[in-house]
Length: 155
Image 1 (cartoon, rainbow, N blue to C red):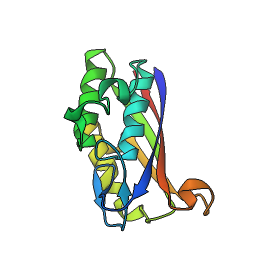
Image 2 (cartoon, helix red, strand yellow):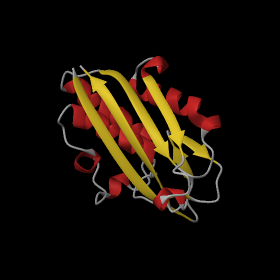
Image 3 (cartoon, rainbow, N blue to C red):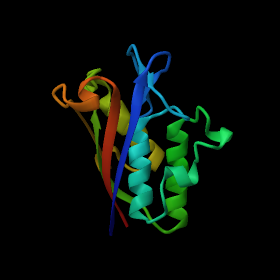
Image 4 (tube, rainbow, N blue to C red):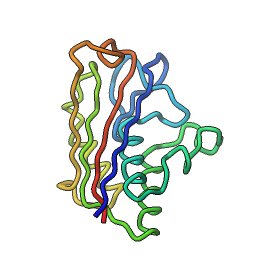
């Protein structure tokens, strides 16, 4: 059994879609990044890769490679799951938290869980996604960006 932790952050900006957990969320801003900037899935992928000591998403999907410009992070997560399986690992469970002052994410959490479970080829009961604010403190509290943490167990 191995444990991994992942963290990611992206800046909120105009003229971008807000995609979290593979769900497009109506909001006046989106996250800035080379791919779709899905901060939740990036934390999930780094958690999985870290648990297996296989690097991080920057190693496997560098932002200097045009192939990943605008990439769908659900597709990248599927690739990470293949990498884990090729190294003899499977996901036991994961627990992720999105930190965002706005928008309210509760209506989208179940779809995020479903998307992650499907990409990881596991039951939804193995996937936990939560959201919290930072009570208007820090960059997330000022709506400058969104961050996410994820821990996982693989075996």
